Image (cartoon, rainbow, N blue to C red; front, top):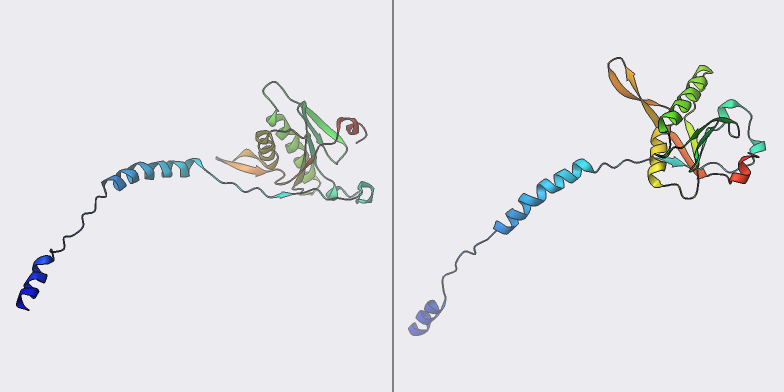
Amino acid sequence: MAGRSSFARKGRKPKQDAELDITSFMNLMIVLVPVLLMMMVFSRITVLELTLPELGDASAQNIDEKNQRLELVVRAEGVSVFYPQGYLVKEVPSSEQGHDYEAIQFVLKQIKQSLLNKDIDKKAATLLLEENTPYEVIVALMDTTRSYEDVLITSVVDAELFPEISLGDAPLVSEQGSK
């Protein structure tokens, strides 16, 4: 029996600590962390709340000015601003560079100011878009309609125009004359 116990002791090798080679992992982290931090700076998520225009008979609506809608009909040729719906305020033609967002915003500022002078705080506007309107144009028009930069005392602030934006389909060109 004594031979057996000495054999068992000789057969076992002492356990060695396992070596961890984390060099490749550290190299990955050195590259990955700055890239992820840079991506956080460039990606900014903005949530836009949209409401759909209400369905109903136009003749059944109240004639009260507070219930009237501001509509922007967006076409490739330009943007037509209607207030109240059906009454053309201004048509802003497009140029070769695209829509004239500053002119559209100027018209919207005038409408907002005239409403405020009548003690009407209207916040809703409807963008009526053609079928193939590019996404970039829709976002730029929403930004133009929502607010504008204004100087207040010594700082630049975003002044509110019409932040509650609804989207709809633009009427067909043949229907616009009767609208």
